[in-house]
Amino acid sequence: MHSRSKRTWTVLGIETSCDETAAAILQGQAGEPPAILAEVVRSQIDDHIAYGGVVPEIAARAHADLLDRAIAQTLKAATLTPDRLDGIAVTAGPGLIGGVLVGLMTGKALAMAWDVPLLAVNHLEGHALSPRLTVKTEFPYLLLLVSGGHCQLVSVQGLGDYTLLGTTIDDAAGEAFDKTAKLMGLGYPGGPAIERWASRGDPRRFTLPRPLFGQSRPDFSFSGLKTAVRRALDLAVGDGPLTDRLRQDMAASFQSAVADCLTDRTAHAMALYEEGPGYQEGPGYQKEPRAAHKCLVVAGGVAANGFIRSALTALCEEKGYTLVAPPLAYCTDNAAMIALAGLERLARNALSPLDVAPRARWPLEETRLAVPLGESAA
Image 1 (cartoon, rainbow, N blue to C red):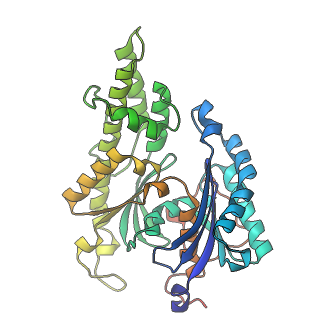
Image 2: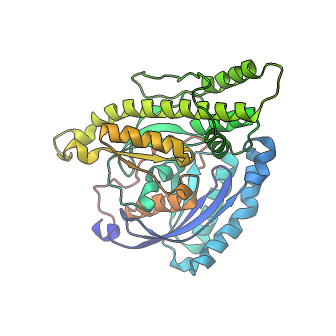
Image 3: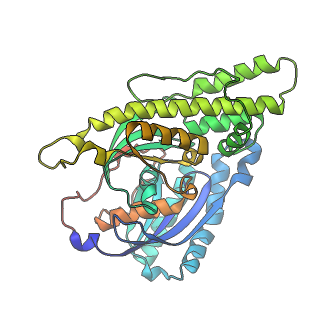
């Protein structure tokens, strides 16, 4: 085990779970920020912008068109040949099943052709580990994963050791941003558009609900918030036009409501996290003070929102937590985080069979290591 953990690995990562076709090559040791030798991300925004959201069939066809070239460009940029790779990490779910299938079948074919191990990675685990791309982030930590398809609070005790504390019961936060932006005609993707318009708006103009605010279980709900936006706009507009001033104020009011929900839910999750096994004394547990474990990792596309980051920063200062977030480029979907998860698993000899199936749904807490952490692997 020690020989594998100290070895330097070179891993190709492939990500096709939604509307980014991405490939990346990392090199490094387990537990340390790796060198990112090369990466390519091909966005499909222009393909989906007319529809106000991602169309699964269009996304899958675009992945099939773009992926081979993205991989070839990544190898060329890294000045590597396939025989230098130690493994191929590929998103096997969750995500749009057509896109996941394109990436996973490509990864399988390359693993067979190049005779290198396959590592089927949970996309959510990629996000969970993404801050470790650039900063040495020790386990355990509390994870707020907030993106277009997911909104979760997870206790991360170690690689493959995840406990779900709270999740959305309807829309994810990023989905609510997209739908609200579409409702106001702000364009796609909705998150960046709402943040731009909100910067010039008054967040106090519209009184919007904060669903589940104050409840002990840290779940999320954003569907009702979107409905409240529509009703408030209908009342404000009446028979008149939807002015830029209205758009700015509603964007600011909506963004403020989402930030309040995220911080309130995260505060409740912090209390649950601090009661977890990481703070118990006994065989197998560390006896470090609680403050050493008070780390909040925020990841996913919505983590790129500056207003929300500021709100979470204030929460962490109040609760005595350290806030860790990946650079903005690694908040959204990317292959570097998939390669990193694969590298960590490769170091533990947790390889995947070539008959591994793609999964549209794959809860993070069901992600387990094929080789337990305590076992030796040659």
